[in-house]
Image (cartoon, rainbow, N blue to C red):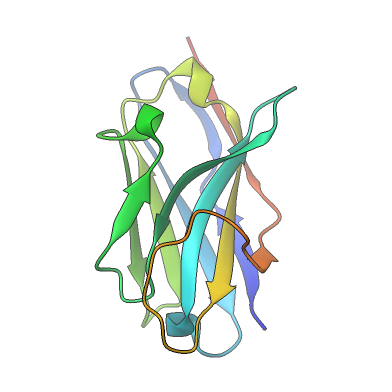
Length: 125
């Protein structure tokens, strides 16, 4: 089992940058594929991006490609979401999520097992 805690959210002007961190407690962080999701006011939660266990492969939704980047440091049990060129439509609560894999090293877009509490990101115009 793993517990996830996001940090780094806040208020930023359009065009600015933020980096979210997601710290994992528990054992075997390197066995977890990790993802980032967001929920904007009045909207459903949506997939933002994901990274595989080894950090060698990532995937993003089209609207954030080229602006957002996911990385991980397995030695620090942490996954990051670097957000650049932020737009007002990126305003949302951002969640990290983890899915355990014993062997497979793949990127996943859904059916995560563990979730963080969320971090608010607000982009002003």
